[in-house]
Image (cartoon, rainbow, N blue to C red; front, side, top):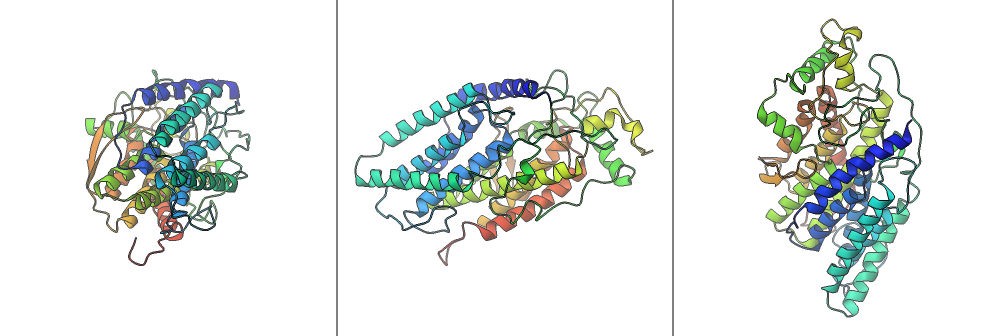
Length: 448
């Protein structure tokens, strides 16, 4: 599987991202919950964790923060931490310690036999960053019994979620052999030069076992399984093929400049991007720490389950990516498709099967949680993008509009067929709905 090549490519990719992260300016936030969500997002990028691994890390960190606050004042259902409340504990100390201890436990300092978790140097840099941030943060809290008890509460919350997920198989390497027939996923070429840089070419499949990781809230990974991609000889497949061939082509595309910006804006990892959206709206609505912690836990757990569920389908259907399909389009048995051996996608194609688009799954899951949390879809917001195309700004009039554009971006980038996006959005909505109604529920009659 060329594991060492994969690891070296991952190191280059994550080094590029890490440089951007370190160079990023400090982002203002309303309280310690948001500050530590920002810290967690930076830490997993510094650690070299890819989007799939980081979704688990961010979900577990947000669960720890949520449980810590509710161990002080129980407003919502806890997830992993049980026991009596401690009203005298410092909330800020509990939040900082819960996030810090969870992140330290989630960033393994040691080389793993596969890409996705980062190199030793990246992991060490991330731990140093988290430790330094914690030292600064905790030093601003006055010493006393409240601080001491808050630290204890936060530590207990982090240990509870780390223990609960310690045997979930996230690091259980499983080999994968690509297919060779038309329609089968095969290691994909990327545009030359790579866009974004340092992506690697024809890499082995990423974390093919992730669909076997137990979900956080869903009953099983296949609870909301998709129907599968269209048959190669179908009219729907030809429609999907011809759309992405035209709009996602790097050189001779028919996309607009706005569509190209959309492709780049949404190329950021879903977990960090949609967490930022949640923070932006939380700031606008002046949520308190408990509400903010619940929202970020719901959003991140829904996205983590979205990856697990979508991954299970990806490696069930093993459907090829547009760049593979278009280059051999004359061999797919469909008279409505025309091959182009020189075709390149606008942006890099991730090394994993096409269907469903988990980027679309996660966006729809997060949007559904946000819609239900605020009891309104028509919430306007403006948000900036993060790495690798940081600083782009877009405005939206609703969560569903953002989720749809998030899915569209994958077609404009030339890396997904439309059916993968449509079915991914549907799957994500169902996941978001289930997570919202089954986790972190209010214990107060007049709350969300």
